[in-house]
Length: 575
DNA sequence: AAAAAACGGGG
DNA sequence: GTGTACGTTTTTT
Image (cartoon, rainbow, N blue to C red; front, side, top):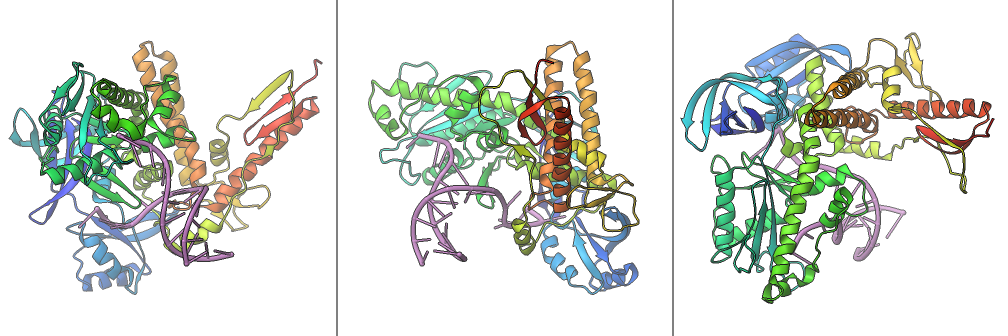
């Protein structure tokens, strides 16, 4: 099946991993794995006494394993537990033991650990070995005998359902305590429809009795059609919280999950996200904020940016008047339909990239679509760390975070543009300057050294030193990414099927984005592999290269009129 | 000057 | 939920 989503539940005190997916026959499937156990690492000051200490403290499943800590070999003690809920309790206990120097990998969510340790990637095909314990037209539940295997697969075709709600709002922004939902618009590849309590002359409007019936019908449609993806615009913070509140007030059960569960609001620090078991809810608003750089991210603005088309706009604070006035109501239906169609089109256009990132990073699309790019890179590296036998660095403590915030990195070299209209302009820029510097100078937290005996690359200006050998963790991974990208670009050249070409293009684009983000994260304060020296060395070498190149060009009579970081513009005389 | 609150998107 | 994850601008103290 294609792996769409993952979570875990507790059954008789045992954590059970649930893999949500869809088989060849398109039938929804849930695969259950009861065999996976949580664990954390302790780095001991002395392995034997530490083992003794842990045994005394009552831990039974202990294993001494060889790992690397920023390249240095260490013996770590793997402490295996029965349930993820034990981790927060026991990590405090372990941390304070005499022979425990440090604890590691104690904050990796259980389902993410499962994906990483078993080499599974959401949006890819997996092969299940197990037996069916429940099978209906609607859904099949499989009990696994062993963890699934990833099999090579084509890019999956997924069913997208876009939705949008409209609300009666006679006093400005609507208040879910009193203002009713007047319609829910839905759009997928099959049809457009609006469920509403008032009709019109438009054939796509499905008339229902009351607000309660709107919500019931909405739930029914999702339950019956089980789309792979449900997309909205700002739906995490508006549509779903609103639907939820109204459903509570009206006593509607929104049990639209594959397992019959209701929608769940997940608090994520400052924001909330809404999750449906089985169906991936993607809010396009945070996705678009990362994807393009605009001054505002209204649906209208984003839609215009992507498609160059304006959509019908109605004044938000007067929507209730369009609802009340029979002669204006059709305009409101059309407006709502345009919004939901715009949402659908945006999803179609940008989700392929996000699905590729999901396939590369290896965490669920639900998470990926809400993660900052720095976080995406981090989870990619956490997976790579597992493959390389590297221990993942801990997240920075609040005090460490504060310290990092005071640090600043000097950026690229900028020559302010000369005013005027220039003729005979040539342009130069480096291809992937920063990723290339990271690779060629082996810039990585594990190669940074102060040892004067080591054979090193020495950065200009501050003089940070990076060991030439062995290859650093981050440079090696960027190298892999760029190699893979080259392979895909070659495949793309050879490909004849335009569909195939498009898919490959998205794949290489995802890899390019990942490689280009790697530089930035060295200076990202919450990054586990944060390395200010690395960030500074990269920009220092960058400035050095661009300045040298400009100087060289000027020897040949070019005159630089503008330069920024990895490229410059210059004028030249005819000769 | 420092701390706290608001803002984004949505109707 | 192996919880409590933004970054910046404006207002208040």
